[in-house]
Length: 226
Image (tube, rainbow, N blue to C red; front, side, top):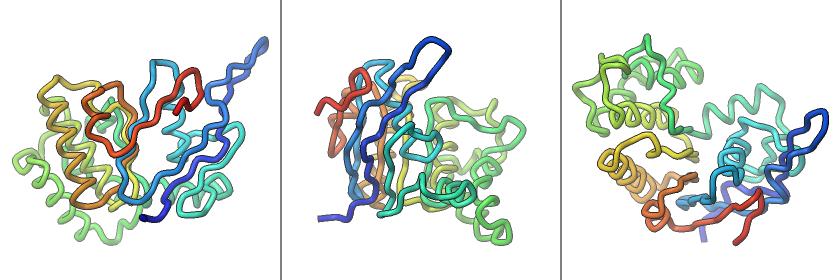
């Protein structure tokens, strides 16, 4: 059996205002093993994206812990947690979050510059290889506005992969795409999981995607129901 890569333990998340306390996540527990493709499903407002952000160190839980290869990421100082996000995890979102003033190649390179700017030549070759593999060999110098939605999402996936992460967190990666481009992105993610053994955790409403995953969990009203 593959090793455990990430573990959510008693995760709770709540937001307070002057009059009330809104509980978004309630005692969430599950594990993900290396090479798994896990899908998180549930209705809007169930807490799926919040949970994904907590798994990736983007949002602190109110209570509980997230262990990555045995280490609690919320026991790390802010600098160490930033390094975790940059080097161990790749993020793919519904909205592509590409910088409009940079071309496709430059957008892909950004995380590698933060990791090790002195290896720029090596990272440049890696970025070109990723874009070529994703069918964007003729789009290196195109800025986001000159790319289709499917092309922008492929650039975002290449950016997520540039630092060779062990874990890919995807928040509705096909939600802003038409049916054909959505299927192409799903096919690509399945390939990455099966061929490169990248662990993937994905939030999606798409039942077809869930059918392709190795494991599915469901959230409802902030509670894990299976």
